[in-house]
Image (tube, rainbow, N blue to C red; front, side, top):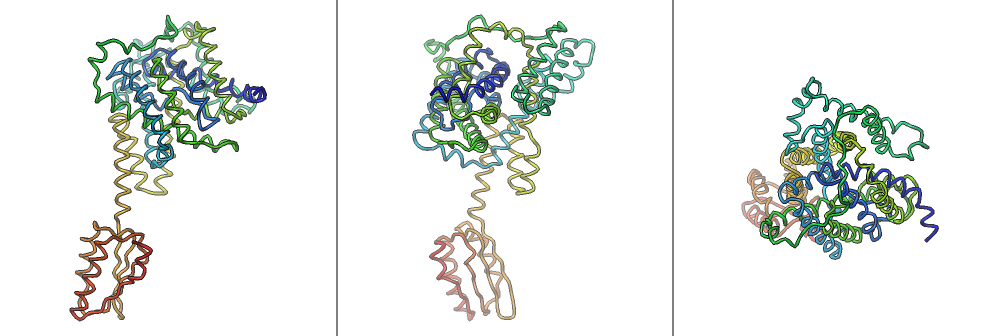
Length: 489
């Protein structure tokens, strides 16, 4: 055990340095106390990290969940959020126990990439307003439309505070971006942390009158589930819908992160069902103590793997360092400008948007590219849950189309007519096949090839059998390769 601690000590410190500014920034973006974000990081390390199925993955509050958390708080309040997180955690634990972890991997990449792009756009445009000490709007589309007006205020004489906040934000983004080009030895120090430190230093030294993080008076406040007034006002259907959506999105992101983390090392690979259960237990605890929901986070997981993490001990230790930070240095929170944390999230949102993904999909499969684009735009325009449902509906329609699509080729030559069937011939193909049959002249020699079919059902078999009898009765000759049916039906 001592060897594990020794090997994972440095990686845990690196992950801690990455996690702290992101936990605080995500909490502020969600509209909750920064301690709620730090507490989620602790739970992600101590609870999820102790049990997870992906040893090197680090869990905690995630930028990808900001949109849905923000929506839940707006509709159900902070206590409602706690209830949704706890219920979502219970659902995830059930998913894990039922062995549904692998099922969650069977998600169209176009939907997942569209979800990440849409989430990235939501984060980018909402945090842009926060970065300049302005107020974000209630939706992604409204945030986008409000950008020109915000820029006008930013450069005007009346927007001095916005101007100073913008300077701090731009400096933070520039440092984070430039840090990717420094020597490898320096990269042990995370770029996000360096950007936040420099942005904080500039704001403090210049004495900018901008918004700083409000250090909480108490470090831990539990949600009050006992109040009868809360239960009387609960929208149970809405909470159920939000909980299911949160469970699904958090699980999908965790498993996507686990798969990506597996590619970064040669050690033990992910047990997906165990991972889903661990994520659920983490969210159950998060909900009960009033923290943010947790999920796997690729930035922290990559930092863990790339800095030499070997076991889950590094994730556990990073949580210990966060807890130590809260207990010993709570006053540091009040020194940090909100603009520098928002800038880190603007940078993160920009990277999540990643238009190269859509271009690559378009080159491979235009239908997948359409699903990707519609999912991303729907999330941005209508909300996270609605956009994901639209994306899944499109992906399901694509699957149904492929499973029921048949191509019919009719080729006429001197020696007769050849009919070649491709794809999946189900009863839905009867009208299409009937139209093709009706166009074939009578009293010819017709040969039907079905070897290129993936599947054929009884309805098509009956249609071909009836056609063969009727066609031969009218003086024609029709042959079907019936002996090939045992491979198809």
